[in-house]
Every structure is written in structure tokens, then in C-alpha cells.
Image (cartoon, rainbow, N blue to C red; front, top):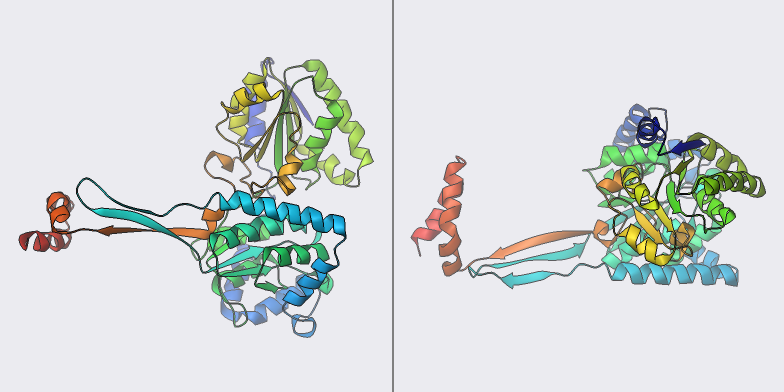
Length: 432
């Protein structure tokens, strides 16, 4: 874990190194992924069956390619009441938040008399990738499926690896709650390729979303353009800005809430109090051994964590902007949190005040927890309904409005050396 102090002469260089540290997988998987995609495109289901046998150790033809709606409904019915309530609350809040994101169609006439506008529609089909193993999170199922449903997507397809043929019952229950249409027992880069190109069994989709490992992320990157994607996401990250009025053990848990995801995750604390920085270092060391994810947290905190002391908390915000974190907690009194938040330019999601832990955002708050990582919040946003929609503009002219704006179009077409463009407009102007 790094300890940095903004007053140190070496701080600028040390912070640059922190900002530019790329925590994505060190192994270059692009060639392997390209080969997988090419094989799935040609061989289709045969390639999926072979890769599934190799990586997930079960036979699709023997055990079944699909997970039925009935299985998902049964998983939902078998949930413990407390867990069912929690998932229901999360689903309701996620649905309400995303319903408020729906864009409005536009249809109006401008001063020239031209009719202009745009119409929003959901894509025909969306694919949602749901990881297996360590990253089998029902909350992520809801966060990906519900915005697609709200957007009006007609067909939602889920792909998920089932190692050894085993499924995660809570994930299946969440799929039932979200209203997924199809679930296929395939994962990895080959599943992304199947969603993009289609196979005899799996019809192609228009958009693919959802988290995954380095192979899945690389497959989405390579297939962007064949399908739309949400983002190419990397390891999780959190930045916490906190003053000494906080309980160090409370903030330590906030930091570890991201460190426990993966050894490549990152947790960073900014504070204006050197004594609190010392207390935080001790609190993190105290909390790690008490949790079942201690090994992962230890690796993440040791390799990627940082505690940074600044003269004033306001001085932390430009530094936070350079990090453009996935999650930013402003753990201060609410008035000060609002003041700091007004200065924030780059963050995937911001959590205001002492009583707003990032973990609430992962589950039941409502805003989507699929967020840009690796400084991508500088130019991208979290998953929303518009990721499952497209906008079609339209234009309608009559003789009067064509007479107003048409001559300028002819002039521009001639300036660009495109005579057919000019003639297309000029023919109509001459007939007015």
C-alpha cells in the first residue's frame, strides 16, 4: 500500500505513476480471443460445445444447452423470504430509476417551417453476459436486464458459464425477476462471439452488456461494430475522500468493499489529516483478517491501494478527476459533500455524505452499478436505458421550407465537389 503526501517534493511523480498504473490483466489475450471468435463464426454450435467441454467441463448435448424459465421460476420460489425481499426491493428501485431515464421523442417545426425530430426505440435483441464462479452476482443480473426491459427490448438473451454443469440458484432467481427470455449455458469469449454472429441455436443480438474476465472484455472490444457494447470494463476501483470525523473502521470497510472483488482492484483514500491517515492504515490492517475475502483484499490493498494526504480536502478533487474513478465517496458532512461534488468532473458514480457507502449503490440504490473503470469516466458513463436504444432522426420539408434552406445546401454541395447532391436539391427548387 502506497503512502503519498501532497507536500512531498516527489508527490507529482509518484501520483503520476499511480494514475498511469494499468491494472488490467498482464497477459495479452487478443490473439487467443481473435482465434476463438473466428472459430465460432465458422463452426457455430460445434465450437461452443467444444469450448464448453474444455473450460467448463461438461457436455452441452448431454446436460442441456439452455436453462429453462421453469428452472428460474423454481429458484425464485425457493428463495429465503429475506433474500427475496432484498432482491425485490433492488429490482423495484433499479426499474424506477431507469424508467426516469427514458428519453423523449421530439417533433417540431423550426423558423424555416421545416419539420424536425427524433424517435427513440429499443433495439430488437440484447445479450447479457453473466459470469460464473467468483463473479456470480445476482445484483449484476438485475442491473443489466432491467434497463433493457425498460428500454423496450423485445428479446433479452443471457449467457452464463456453468462450470461442471452447476448453476447459481440466486442468479437464476434474479433472471426470473428481470424477465429474461433465453438463458444459454455458455460463457467466455465464445459466448460473446455467439451473441454477435449467431449460431444455429442462438440467434444474434444487437447489443451485448455485462461484466466478465479479460477474455470476455477483449471479445467485446473486438466485436464492437458487429454488435453494440456497454463498455470494456477493467478491475473495480473506489476513491474515498474523508476527514478525521469519520470512524476509521467504517471507512476501512468502504475501501475493502472494492479490494475484495479481485487482486487487481484498487482502493484509494484522500484525507487532510495525517493522524487519520495513520489510523486508516491500522484500521485496514485490522479489518482484513476478519473477513472471508482476506486473501483477495490483502493482494489488492498491498499492490494497488493508497493513502494520500492533502492540505485541504478541496485539493483532493482535481486529483480525483485525474483518476476518474469508477466510484467516488465523499465521506464528509453533507454541506461539504455538496460543495466538493460541485467541483467533481470525472467519476462513474458519486456517493455523498457519511451515511452513503458505495456498497448501497451496488445493490439497492437504483442507479446502475455497471460503471466505467480505468479512467474511462473521463469520456463514458454508467449503463443506462439508452445503451439499449437507438435514436432515429427525421425531417419533413414542404415547398416553402425547401425554398428557405435549399439554396444553401446547393452551395455547400458544389463547394464539396458533389454535383449529384447539388442537383438533387436544385431539381426541386426549379419546380417550385
